[in-house]
Image (cartoon, rainbow, N blue to C red; front, side):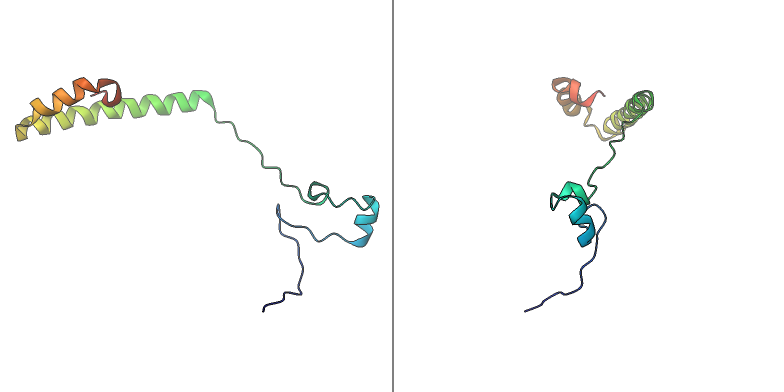
Length: 93
């Protein structure tokens, strides 16, 4: 059996309060009194996200064109074009 005797604070997880702190908090032992668990929510810049989406969509069109060209070389364009037509909203080729 392992018994740990060392006690310590861990940021955002645990805090070793002193007796004085417990008394100052009227013996209330709620975790939120001693441990700051708040994580700041970072909201991304909407213009930046929109630009990244546009860049990805542009790249997807280029890759789709290269894929179609490769499929033509392999003689497989008919089957793939039919699949893309059925699912054109998913593939956007």
